[in-house]
Amino acid sequence: MNDNSTNTDLLIQYLDGELEGEALTSIREKIAASHELAAELESLRLAKESVKTYGLKKNIAGIHTEMMKELSATPAQHPIGIRRMLQYTTRIAAMLAIVLGTMVLYQYFSATPQQLFRNNYETFQLHETRGGNTVSVLEDPFKKGDMAVVTAAFKKIDNPQPEDYFLNGIAALNLNHAPDAIHSFLALQQNNKVNDVHFFEEDAQYYLGLAYLQNNEPGKALPLFEHIHADQAHTYHRKINSWFMLKLKRMARH
Amino acid sequence: METGRNLTDNELLQILRSDVTPDEAIRQLYRSQFGITKAYINQNNGSDEDAEDIFQEVVLVFIELVKKDKFRGESSISTFLYAITRNTWLNELKKRGRSKLRDEKFEKAKDNTEMDISHYMVNRELKTQLMRLIDSLGETCKKILLAFYYDNLAIKEILQNLQYENEQVVRNKKYKCLKQLEQMLAEQTQLAKNLKSILFYE
Image (tube, rainbow over the protein chains, first blue to last red):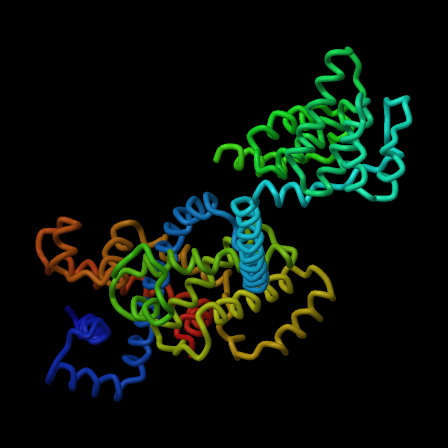
C-alpha cells in the first residue's frame, strides 16, 4: 500500500471505530493537519451513511410488502379524531344497549300473568258489540259502568243469551272476579258451539285469554293468544305482539 | 424484544436507537400509523400508491432521525410522523404543480406547523439517485457493505456468511468497495452535496 491508500485504510478504521490508543491519536492529528484527509474522511462518512440509508430503505420495502398484506386483511384505520369519536360513540351505544338490554331482560323475567293482564286489558266498549240481535237487560248498567249491577242482574236471568254471557264476563273481569269471567266466556263458547253460531266469538277468545291471565293460568291463555297472534284477520290480532307472546310463553313454561 | 403487543413510544425508540434489527419497530409503525397517513393522503388528492410511497419514506426519515438523536420525544411519535407526512405530501403536491390553491394550502399548512420539521422533509428524488448509485456497485460490494454497515456484522461473521478465504480478504474487499463508492460520490459533486444535507440532518 502506498501512503494514500494507507491513510485511506486508517480513515476507514477510524470511521468504523476500530482504532485505539496511539493509532487513534495519530490519525486525529493527521486529519486536523490536512484538509485533504478531512475531506476524504467526510466523503467516506457520506459513503457509509449512504449504505446505511440504502439498507434501511430496502429493509422497509421488504416489511412494507409484508405489512400491506397484513393490513389489507384487517379493517382500515380511521384518522385519530374519527377513531376517537367512533370509540366514544361505540362506548355510549354499548352502554345504552346494556341498559336497554337489562330493562328488557328485567321486563322479560319479572313479568307476571297479572302484569300482562293489566298491561293489555281495556274494558269492552259496548258500541263495539257485534253479532247479537237481542237487547240485553245488562246493557244499561254496563254502559253506566256499574259492573256489580251487571253481574247481579246476570244471575237473575233464566235463559242467558250470548250478549248476556259476554257482558257478564267483561263485568266480572272489571271486578277482578276472574273465575266468574272464565265461566261466563266458556259458557258463551259452548252456547255458540251447540247452536252452531259465532256470537262474540273473537271477543270471547281474547277476553277469555285475559281472564286466564288474571286468574294466573298462563298455560290456558297461551293457545288462545297463539291462535290470535297467528291469525292476521282476527279482530284482536294487532293487540298481541311478539314481545307479549315471548313473555307469555316463558310464564306458561313455569 | 417481545412481540405481539403494542410497544410504547419509549420502547420503540429504544429499539431504533440500538443496534438490534428495527423490523418489529417498523411493523408497529405500520400498524399504528399507516392508516392515518393513507387517510390523510387520500383526503388530499393522493392515491393509495402515493400513500404507500410517502409512508415508506417517512418511516425511513424518522428512523434516521432517531438514530442520529434528532428526535428526542418532544412530541409523540404519532404527532411527529403526521407532521412529516403532511409537510412531505404538501411539498409533493407543490412539485406536481397541481394548482395555485395547493401553494396557498401549502404555505398556510406550513405556517400552522408547530414543530420546525421543514428540513426533515423527505427528498424522494435524491433517495432514488442514491439507490441507483449503490445498485451500480454490484452485488458483491453491496452484500459486504450492507453486512458491515447496516446489519452490523463483524468481519468474522461476514466471512462465515459470504465464504471468503479469510478475514483479511473480507477487510480488503470492504475497503475497496467503500472507496469505490466514495469515489463515485466524489465524481458527482452536486449529488454528494445534496446527499450530505439530507443524510447528516445538519
